[in-house]
Image (cartoon, rainbow, N blue to C red):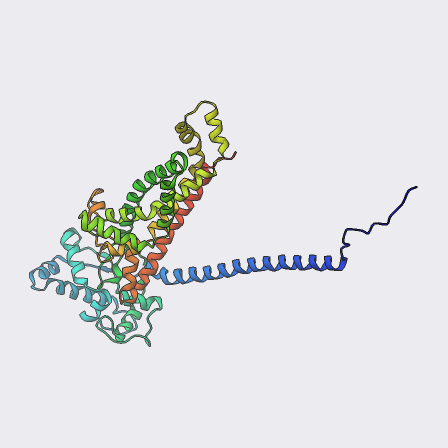
Length: 441
């Protein structure tokens, strides 16, 4: 005799409406998250565009200058007469003013160029003419085309930064001088040209912003980056290989790894204090020298290079090491012949990014004196470029931004553009090297 029992169902029947609501809610949540991500990207791009516009709109005027181009002829009699006077530069200025006045005699405007107004517009014209004709006496009696740089305030007026309503009379520029500028511009004598001196020149102190350039600071940064590259790359890679491949796992190595991670987060000004106390006060290395700046930036860059190199070594699959050891290679051969070449793209990328970070640092350079020094020229030789006092691009930008004249403020923005170009080139080089040495397995 068989008995049958009706066992109750143990499963729970799903409610189709509830399932549909949960699916709709999940899909809506994914759409909202996607919208949040797109919104974040749009906001980031917007602020990046605003930043880029601010930098370039403020810095582009630094790459141009206002010049007065005029043909000037000095006879031998005038040269001898000027050299025979007590105030020689004043005589040359008077000759120039007479020539300029004759040039403007045919224009409709009746203007008069005085020695004081000419000096406010063009600076020490007499000194420029005197130096030229003393070195080129064969040009006497022949027309010579001079391109004389106008003052920074005249440049600001030409670029629209200074207006008649906003300016006040001062010893640097008078409102009446703007009439002379308008006449010169109307006759094509004064115009804007590209300022190569800004890229190749040096700082000129606080009195001559129009002639200031960033070229000497670029050279200082170049020598610093050489020191950082020569020291940080071999030391950082060697330390990373030892810690990742050869060092035993114990408390001592754990302590080293923790300290390296902590050093990567230390503010850069702390490294500047260390460099001041060790390299300058204890070792008596020359203050404001690129060598000292390179040593300080090396200490700051080493943790970044070590961390990135170790991450690159970890990314190599263990099977590569095991295969090398399986065919009879030693531990050293497996690392240097197989692991290191595969990790090279990441190592080079981390090194270049570390150098780019060091290139833009200002705080460590404040404490070793590279901000207080005015780099007025290039080093005399390659070796002197390491030990002679010099400045660096971020330090020069900081110095210009701290000065009162607005023209230096434009120079600071222009220096930021130059610095960003160097950083962009270094990051592009990192991408190219990564693609060039990348190997797939």
